[in-house]
Amino acid sequence: MKDGKKPPSDLVKVYHARQMVEAQMIKAILEDGGVPAIVGDEALDQLAFGAVSVRSGLSYDVLVPADRVEEARAILERPRGPDWTCPKCGEKIDGVFDACWKCGHERE
Ligand SMILES: [Zn+2]
Image (cartoon, rainbow, N blue to C red; front, side, top):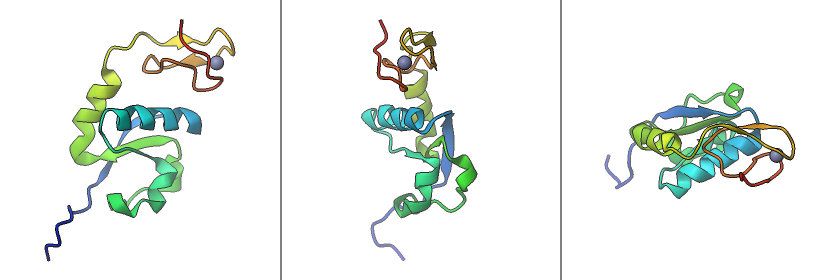
């Protein structure tokens, strides 16, 4: 039956974060780029994506619909600088971030 809605997409992991806040920042970067993204344990509540196989063990994984994976990877692999270490708190930060996801210190 067609009702105008897209069929549910499978979700594919595009990033594994060590902290929820890091995962949330990756999600924000993807959404800024126009790709809908969710963090693993949110997926349980995200019926809009038709998530069917997401388990709580994926807590900090960032997931996107399978048909947006290439777009998501392109966004995350966009050259934004090398990985860096936050001078304020010492956290190792993925180059995709312009600011420390832990303490908010901006990359210099
Ligand atoms: Zn920091």
